[in-house]
Length: 271
Image 1 (tube, rainbow, N blue to C red):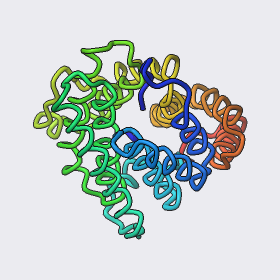
Image 2 (cartoon, rainbow, N blue to C red):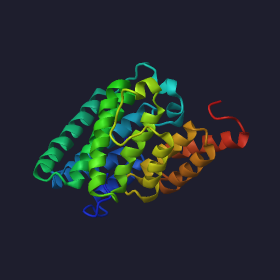
Image 3 (cartoon, rainbow, N blue to C red):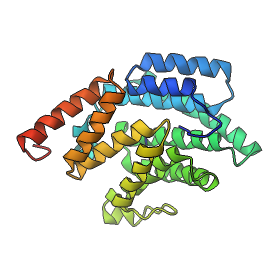
Image 4 (tube, rainbow, N blue to C red):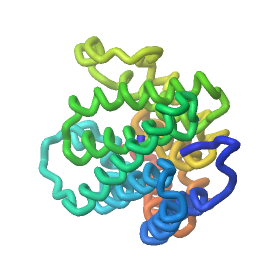
């Protein structure tokens, strides 16, 4: 929810390079690029927001949370089995989030229509949401953060409906709310979100087609959603595209190989 802007104000740059390194799971390369950007423009919230997502991605990978088996099994998501998060990485994530949000709020105070500041808030809040839900296992507490992140994305899309990366937040919020049990969904109200899983997937598909920085991430989330919905062929297509675009990423190759074997064997998913 994991999970940055496609605005005209942000041309192909070091942010593009940082995301390319992240999607290839070259975390040191991504960090080096982002630290250089931050040193050049320390008041820009964008670099810090991307840095927080990089730290989160590396920790999710270390804890094997990015594997499809985790996301396709609700019991593994919800179970209270203790993970062993790295306290140093947690501190780095929280600091990067605070650095991003402090600077973004200063820019929004001066200009409430600052699109990159709104997106930095959306991204950093999403990172905190994912850390809270997936690593700290505080799913209920994370729902208030889901609402906050969706609110920033909706503000941004009202200003610029073509800021396609922001649809990832609204689409995943729609899907997540739609996946909640009815008695939980009754108490979780997010403005302009109906809790329709199919609509959520369609919205994320917009990012997979038209997004910029988050286009690959949208494909990752769509592949996971297709696996959850027992649509392995659709997931296989997306994973093949990710393997082609990010050949250095070992997880994409592993997931594609496992899924292809499952499909060819005719076994149901999850067996």
